[in-house]
Length: 69
Image 1 (tube, helix red, strand yellow):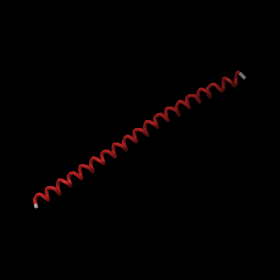
Image 2: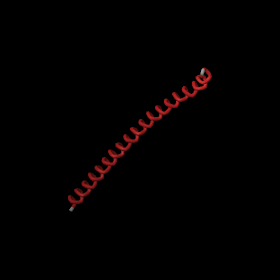
Image 3: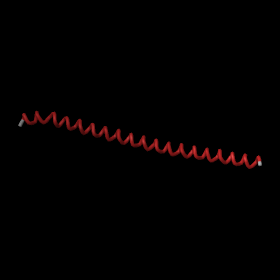
Image 4: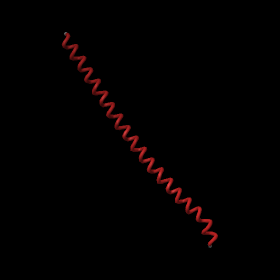
């Protein structure tokens, strides 16, 4: 029995390490997912700002053309 305990000890300790590794990987994956979501939101905001700027420029151009005629 003592011999079995000695043989199982490294396996039990290894399992704890494996669980810790899985836990760290899960935390890192969650952080990466949040980073990706933040990037998507930034992309959407930037696109909206660009579209708004283009619309304003088009309106200024139309106003300038109307004023010159």
